Image 1 (cartoon, rainbow, N blue to C red):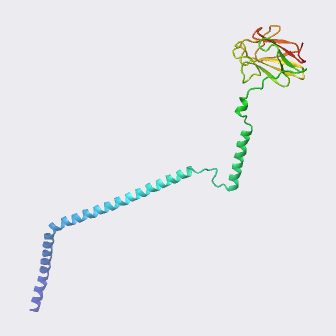
Image 2 (spheres, rainbow, N blue to C red):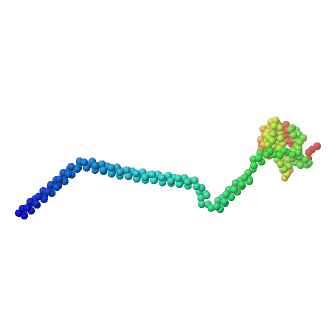
Length: 241
């Protein structure tokens, strides 16, 4: 009897297990239609959140790189404005440089000729006195006048800014700077030079001076300006009676 009951119990155990599995399968089958959409939505939400976190991290990294690049550019601009010649100099070197610049500046100005000196007209020709080298007018505008030639160059013409022996501005036959005359004490001769005059400078022989060429005259020799209009004579002694 006992063995029969045991056999029945052994037979019922598999049946009970099969029934339990069947019930669990039915329960799972009943839960599947409602659970799958929930699980799918939850998965999509998790994926969207992960993508959002990744995108945020990428934007943050890009922003940091941009800020670093801008800061580097600003530092480069600041360095470009630095004076490389003054960086690292001490006070003694800077003082020495300033002193050198000061001397250089004043050295140039010390040797600069003021414009007022360049534009200053020559002193008028002085009247000759006693026995000395002179230029005397024989005919024309300066007839009867004698001018000192010693230790200076006499410029003859119509330009008051450059000529010591002046002709009237209306004397158009005379150039603005007609000719020059000087006296050489070593050789005791007068040196006459035409300065490119329009109507020429002439010797007593009628020879016209070539512009820029120096001609030597002895005491008592004469020359004229513009043909026979104005005559001069050079002398190395006093006026003749």
